[in-house]
Length: 115
Length: 413
Image (cartoon, rainbow over all chains, first blue to last red; front, side, top):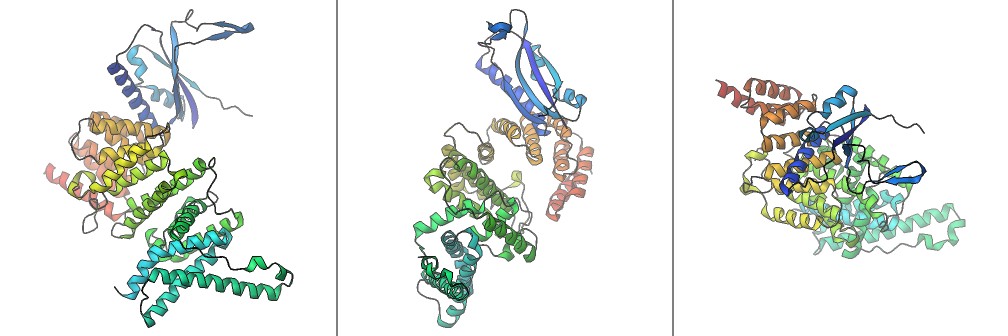
């Protein structure tokens, strides 16, 4: 069993303010999707990232306000999973709710650090 | 009531008190001496009461005998040691018989401390449950062997080995410090949870002892709640779960000892008092930030204990299972989550999700698929149910499944 990281990318839309119902529906979609992965015993951990107040540090301690000047997409969160191989990891990404809003899932294999 | 019945009843309620008090007094290394003195006390009761009749206050009689036997033990021990070791003569204090305090306060204090002493991760979880049943609940070796479908020798060996390890470890029988409580409590709660489940999910339903396992697990959990520093949200969550589950103890077994599925239970047999206790502890568990698996399981059990139809019931249960799986995966929870999904979203979606689980050595997996395919594709339903019968380890399970298969076949004509 290997570990894979799913990175969720989405268009940066700071002006969109979802209603409480929309938010609720979105939470349900994500929970059902991740519940399905967890039901297969493949779930390790997940987190969402806030898009507010993001800072980027560049060489020489130059801090800028977020990566948004150059990028249209931002990372909204990540999910760490177990899978036999890359194909299985990709299969698990199917049905991710990010696709409903035009986003994408980047799947990367984790290389364990040998100390 | 005959003397024998009275003695076995007192053994149930008093043995565990005497043995805990003596263990705390002697230390974990002398756990066997505490057991011997407690057993000898009951042996003497049985002999004496047959000849002279039952005393006016049988429990008090037992306490006095236990105290005297402790004094005798220390006297004998002293004589023996004095003969073989002159050096130790000067060390008189070591041989003074300690005062055996069988007051209600010291009994609960001793039992509480013994819970922590027995639920020690240095011994296997199986051994912890065995020792808990023996020392904290006062079950006999035969009863424990029956419950685990094992024999007396195996259980004796298991407990003996566990006591050896505890003796070598020789940790003090004491209440853990404030900072240590959460970590130590984790082991304790796991053992109490498993003890409860041992009773609740045992397929050996005709045996009434399993119901007692549930009640004993609840009694020990309640001991933790009565103590201020262990009356924590997570303990309330476990207690809530146990109350909700136990509320259906009477409804889930027929008089013939057959298992009755949830949907077919007579709701009038659900215990309302326990459901309302469950609600009480669930509210008490909601303090603080932590959401443990016990919180989630108690909340699921809460929904299962609601009698009135609520359109959101299965959606709520599904979301709780989604969260539970993310913190604590197990095949049975995965299957239950998929069943909730079928109730909340429909069978077609659930079939797709179920077939991803691939728990192909588990009869419950095929019986879930059988359930989901029923009325969608009855041929496939039958095929899955038959596979479930083939894999089911217990006859009781096979019987339930055979009945369903029969009904499906009749319908098919």
